[in-house]
Picture 1 (cartoon, rainbow, N blue to C red):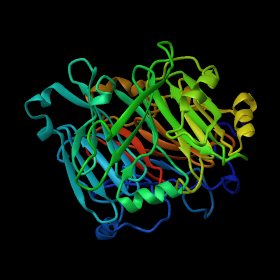
Picture 2: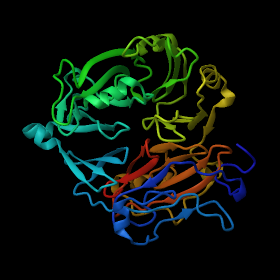
Picture 3: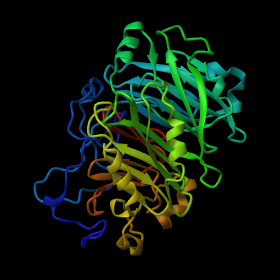
Picture 4: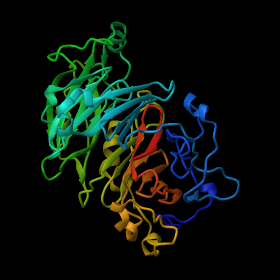
Length: 465
């Protein structure tokens, strides 16, 4: 932390660009303070159809001076949910929105096409027995994984895969999926061949569970209507490759990537990042290039003790990676990990030795606190939102509560709180943007999600996005 301290205004000329992630959303007549933030980019056909100016409510602070343009910009896209929103994920201009009645709406933000994935029809009379625990959309926007829990005790119930239709993943029956590492493969002749034959596959992916297990599998579809039989697809193999143990708890984030090496003809190098509520693993190693799928368990077994512990067990723990351009054209260059003490962030490198060095040396790890010393000592002001939902009324005395979610950019971390969203500069821990919410009309904020292929970020409430 430098002499300015977190949250104090610093010279505008020293503010680095925010990076590529932007904010976007769906809903007409949203107050500006609710709207997701959008950097300069072409509008989608839906956005162009709105053509309305924003209305200002809530409080904004841009921490800049002079004629410098705002760090973050906003626009809106229409969407009026029939039921409260519970989950949202995005990939390749596709947005999946889960609602309280257990319907999942799939929206193409380019064409405005909407498809309903009706879980209620799938479960029928059993609908009251289940709840949607998590949903995951792969970076291509084609594979939607739905992890379903028992409504009574939050235990694993079923996992479903949606590609044009719902299908049960029987091999994952006893697992509640809490994180997915999708595949970002480098283009190969085999991939080109699969495109010619009409085969659609996720490639090798890693699944994290609430019991701390890591599973390796692959989802495959032969064409638009016909699925492979269960013995060969869509989850034609599931292999347990790691168990973090009870002391580490549930897997809260997992990512893996192939990285460059000098012997691509004989071996492939991978880096795996894995987080729990209080632990972060970074695993790097080589496997034979002649084995498919890659035996990632060998890399994990060699690195199982290579982790960092932090105090506390933060329930909103999240791992997020920043890509300078759309994957698989680039590797992530930075990670951010949301923990109890603060947000841990560091650069990632494409070279094997540098990747290990930056993790083992503490001087490369930056911890961003949630709030500044000044904020901790400040009395609650009269501008503190008072129209809170009843269950959050008791939180008035702790207005600056802990984050719900984060997104990493090249120079900033975007932090979502219960009543505000802020951008903190990684270089000096300064708050350079802040926008507060008023949640009386549209419900409390639910979460924040990023389309990794397009670097668009969505902030969603119960009734708006």
